[in-house]
Length: 208
Image (cartoon, rainbow, N blue to C red; front, side, top):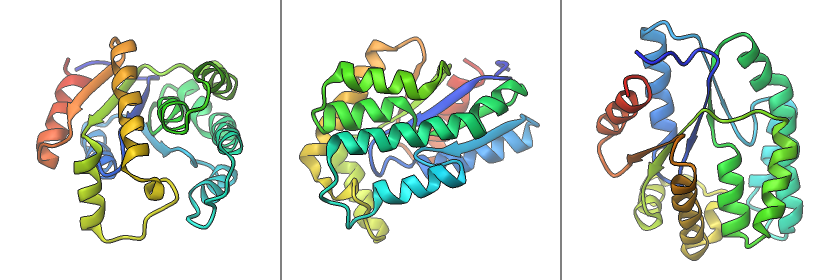
């Protein structure tokens, strides 16, 4: 089995790809295999960062400026790294994070149309030198993803309200990032059953 001690693993994908389900399955796998892991999310992961998350995702915040949104994500990440991610990695724990800098690039640069270099620079400052070791990209086109979101019947957040054209650009961003950073990206077909997706993740992440 691949040694992931002290490694930073991110889970990425568009809306409706099944990240929450796969994270729960990963938690069970780590518990059964005695893997010392921390599971966290962005935006969020600390009390301060969770309050920022509420501001970002609040459906009533439709007038939010794109730069303001970018900087809120960065503020949340800086706090998250300081309180949760960096201390866990220092202790040799495996950290699994639901979204990180790839989401910022996909959503803010590709989706919102902000300058890519600017977004990358903001991400670099906020990340405080923390590097991603592996990224699990749950690959599903936005049309199928939003069919799943609609089937859930839950209230949608501000980003889910952005529409298919926006999320098509986000998907393009993730696809281009997966090619640019192919050495760390683990691309998994998210159209498979939950167990099928989980088995592919385990085989590629822990056994590949």
